[in-house]
Length: 234
Ligand SMILES: *Cc1c(COP(=O)(O)O)cnc(C)c1O
Image (cartoon, rainbow, N blue to C red; front, top):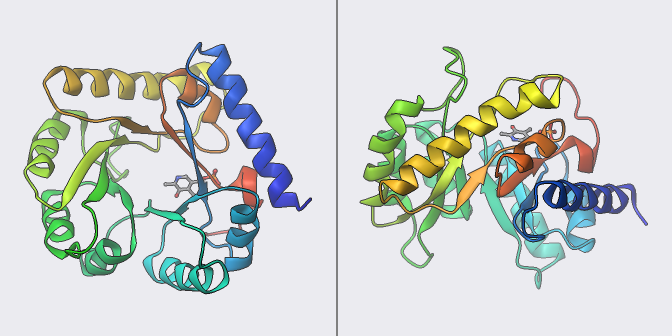
């Protein structure tokens, strides 16, 4: 068994354990394998071990990997999620190649993604990135501005609003990690209460996945725990 396949098994086991502890349904969380900076061979190893959803941060790197995977595994239906910062000049390629985008944080980008989504594909699934800790340097929409952006996205014909995403600042203790995730869960509930239809809370990475699942995550984005340590600056 490859290291990646063993790691995947361990991560899936951790997810199950966290779900049980939280008394949630066994299938309530989907694992997004974050393959940024890793080559097509690593994605292939994970796909061969049963993983289907992959997260990428860099448009060019991702599109090359998609082509390699299509060539090597033409029968596998893989799902590609864009989770990196969005530059306006990359929206066309993102709209053409990805199934999901987790990092929509402004109206202009949402409109471009909708306009540029090819007609022969289903609407692009999107999450709004929320700056839940309110840090000035962090990307994402402040909590009070999420409703407005959500209403805009709901009205765009080629986007399907799926939910909210966050990358809180790293914390050592599980208690501290849970605070921003709890705020996300409350914001999610508030907006759904106002009639905004969403089913996804994208939160939790290798080091805070358990805390995120305890607070209602439905997608965890895990890189290091599956593929290993990335090189610095990646
Ligand atoms: C890199 C990245 C991840 C994965 O982080 P790990 O700590 O390697 O699990 C998750 N989400 C986003 C947005 C990322 O950029």
